[in-house]
Length: 278
Image (cartoon, rainbow, N blue to C red):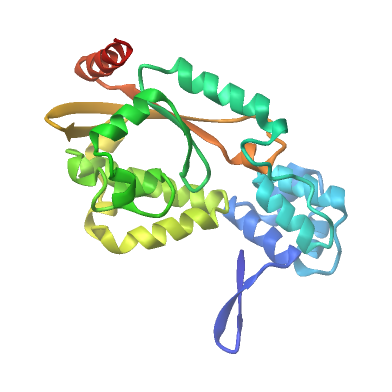
């Protein structure tokens, strides 16, 4: 959201003009760029940002679509302009979410014997497959209590001092990349929840490590390597989102699938799956 000053203090500008300016700048577009992309005249974009013109409901949806604004924030735009929100936020167990959650379960199950999770935009784990749960068990039955937060949160698992950070043997390489990814997502997706998680974890981080640049970051993918209970584990992640989502909850789901980065890790997870079936 845009910031303005009043009596020497910064305040958040949650008006429609402020939200429009803020998201245009997040996307690094000029008013002319936005006009050309959206089919709206630059003059009208300027009038909307200055408050000299009021947007119609269709104009809000057109501009927010062009700027790829998340559905939760499109609702904020509509509310700020005096309209009712358009996109619902359904619970995961809502009957109308059955097809979506069935598809997510199928994806997670199909990825076995390797770990996979479904995350919200704050990286809270909303669903996990059996290999991920087995991997969590290797970290200790109390691992989620140790990292706190009240949710199974992947950022807390990575960056809390009592999470997996001490077990990651290439932390100087992967730590900065994961942290910056979370920062970018929080900024580009308007994720206030993730910003709160980052602010809570920041005091425990080594600033020199987080802002270092490792040569290994030039690889096509950078695996994270862990040593857990004398087991060497090397994995990398691929992230997917749901296309054409029309619900806030579905729009914010991220599916993170973990793949073995070496034959030893592949054999480890296949062996764990075989043992679990006996």
